[in-house]
Length: 242
Image (cartoon, rainbow, N blue to C red):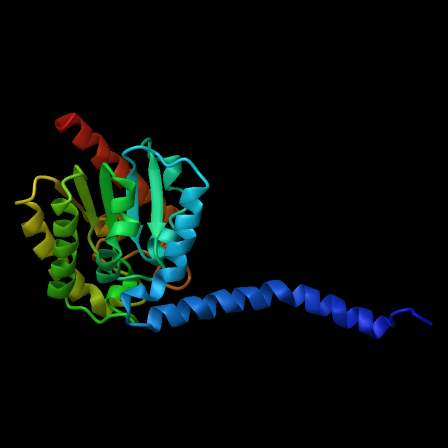
């Protein structure tokens, strides 16, 4: 009497084992719902989490702030390469307009020396359905907002990445890259980085070995190439603008 039966104990143990799986499913479904929400305020919870984190730690002076969506959140090894104070501020699966809308909290608050933008695949799928012209225009608008504050010295933009899963995006990505290249040529504070050649084969298609199994996001080897490319750009900038 008073003892818990073996059957009840087994059920309790199974429930405890399932808690992490249920929690993961909750997080994935929450992110999916936010991605489908067209409002730029869909990421309010993540912005609030960054604000709490900022209040509990000493923030660097004139940091390099990396912004974007899921690709920024998955970029976990950049601090191993970059020698500058660094803040990673990935926001859900945000598109450029979401970042512009939340500029004050996501970028301006930190008074950055350098801003780095890595666009997500959501620019073309699920959250938006941009053309190359539309993406280039959105990036120009974000840079203009940043420039209007007169604080950031350098604005670095990665052109959109081609992916193994969506070869149909290549045409719009090439168009966006062309337009951004023409624009950056007239903006001395803007540096444009096109990583597609480093991630691609002789035919210009991305090599699967640099991507996760989802065919969209980079793996550790892919991110290492982005990190080295970014570090080289920062060193070149330091030599020409000490």
